[in-house]
Length: 79
Image (tube, rainbow, N blue to C red; front, top):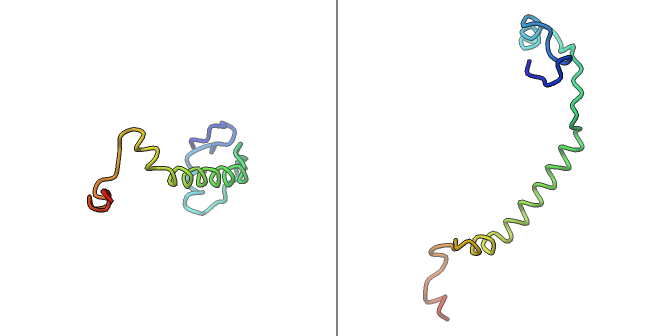
């Protein structure tokens, strides 16, 4: 019902309800402009970036003055 492409929307509420209830298959062939390969590759890239940022998180955060508290005792830090 909220499909951006007007021609891919249901023609009426009865048709949408029948599909929702499983009484009818969706007759609308929705060809998304974003392919499955694009979504998968984008997800892999995003996961890689998150892993990279996680590796350098304290370096990045300390640049903004954020440091972990109570990470170890003061005696260890002094030696």
